[in-house]
Length: 262
Image (cartoon, rainbow, N blue to C red; front, side):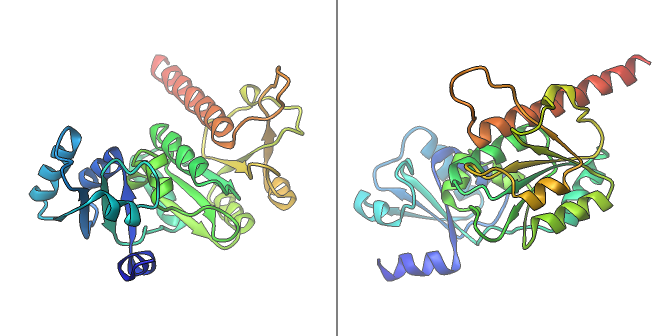
């Protein structure tokens, strides 16, 4: 590995792909420089170049071979932004975001999601659903990197993410703040659409293979599952998470409509 690449991995992070880099530019967050493939000055690349120049961000052209050496994903689409490491927040910052929006807190807790593509997909779904923040563990789980950023289509730039030492302790902190904790578990008899998911809420999504740890499971206030009618008896973690997240969105919307009618 070249010295330049080693230094980037130690002290910087990178965002790859046209949509992700555009989202990054529009978020106003710090960007150290942007690499583009020499000759790739067409389509959305022109928009990226224009926005980068507007923000006075250094643009460096490199040939395709050099770009492939720098890239951390295969489909970087001719553009890579070099940025400071992702800035995680505290749980208190997530709760404060809910207060700032004058909404019941809506938090996603990930108990050991290992696949960065799953993490990115969950972040993307959570951001579109209006979730106030996501909690992930520091150990034995995916963290935010260029793959996660690309899988989220840049949604990480708009989502508060806390990285914690202990998920169970974090759940207790949310409970102390008035949140109800909903776990997703195939062993329960309670279907997600029968459960009240309004009010201050945390939804736990477990590991892709083993689900939630037993300690986390016991710390949940209630458990829900998704009905399975096919021969395959499990869903991708990001898919199952999205189903439950949007059930909560639906219930909250209906509750708001009921209040307006009254």
